[in-house]
Length: 251
Image (tube, rainbow, N blue to C red):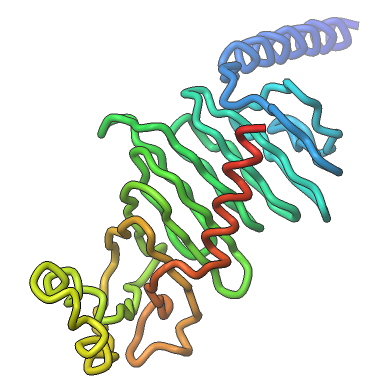
């Protein structure tokens, strides 16, 4: 009988300890909203950090640390971050809210219109092919076909996840910036003479506005590297994509 009573007492104590631990864990959960959903088109779901089940996203729904936002075929979602920055997920995109200063761009195409931030409050976006450091800018990231980053405004830092990038950059464009100040009218003749590239191996680099990066796999590298990266000017299609997202924000 004594052993049964002792067992019951021990079991009761364990239940009490478990309840206390659960209460402590609930108190430690970050309940600060990281973003709010402003617009939804099509099928959009949220996978909360504390659940294994997705639910249909709702307009004005708050998103918290660890939550994942997912868009499906022909769907889009416009969200606003805590600082007023805007982010648009195109179809078949996934975005995870890791922290106030960190987003994980899991897949798909996502448009970012990030407000200017101080050095200590910068934002980083991790993609499958790089980590992007941001302090205020407008850009698009697409994960298809190796990956692409298009920067419309400002400056971003692009860092490798592992080894160095093999960065291919048209030499003509760098030379042209100095040349155009002196002999703009002769640019066409000059351009015809300089179509070679500069190739550098870098762990991280800055991307200027109106420039586009396309990422390939390491098989395209001339030497050991994380991936081959081509930097080039915007195409007409890139400009149309920015105009499309800008219009969606203004609606």
